Length: 341
Ligand code: SAM
Ligand code: FES
Figure (cartoon, rainbow, N blue to C red):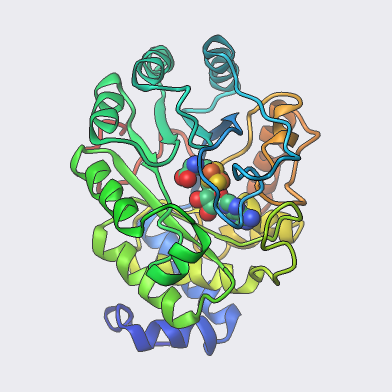
């Protein structure tokens, strides 16, 4: 294993991703996580409030062209009520995620944000690419964090898999979000068709370079209703390795054990928590909507309730000797953080 200061180097990262024995890599990431951010696991309540999207990402189950999806969008009141129930369950961060659904315009989103912020929680948005004025208004309305994966830094791959979109535009969105003082979350999908470990190493260096506060890294899982239905998909091992290297590169950021990891293996999130992760985002969406927000097949917990999901993950976390985070769990060294408790 290279020393920590030698890790931010392309060749060393490729080695870690491909050659270092997995157990050794996970152990080191776990140690770095313990030393930098401690043993608490922060829970975020994830609300998937609309599966309507203007984009057509080739891998995504809710892409615009997938005509077999039954579409939904929550009303503003329904969304705020879902957040209220999640807060009552003890969540101190609410994450609002959706397709790029412009029904939720600036004014509507700001009104929703203001109502949720009155509940005295941290609020993360994951609603895709918007104009600067929107990001600014959401921030002023109280949004604390924003999650937008860059997906890959391989421009050709990005443009192949995200038709009609621009990698440069996505990159600019990340810079705007950062400039506005949000805690910035980004990340990649591992195992996209045509993605190489060389480009994953580039991605990790890019994420470090832009100074993210949170890294969401998950495997690509082919969806039958998309043009990539017959592709192989990413492996849990490569996704875990990538996440572990991210931890070595950025010891004190927040890293979730992603739902997609658990969709590939019943213990996927626990494996991730033992390999560098310190956050879990249980789904607090209610009823039918859980099933309809199908980014990939085999999504976990679609028939469960928010109460069940919270207690299930809490049990799992305690079973590995970790504790549930007591505060809002913001990035401990974020400069403009309004979210520390
Ligand atoms: N529209 C918002 C955006 O673009 O950031 C948020 C929703 S989007 C569905 C959230 C993430 O889901 C994407 O960034 C992508 O990495 C992931 N995703 C989409 N399809 C997937 C698939 N088939 N397998 C695994 N992850 C997928
Ligand atoms: Fe828009 Fe997936 S294509 S959320």
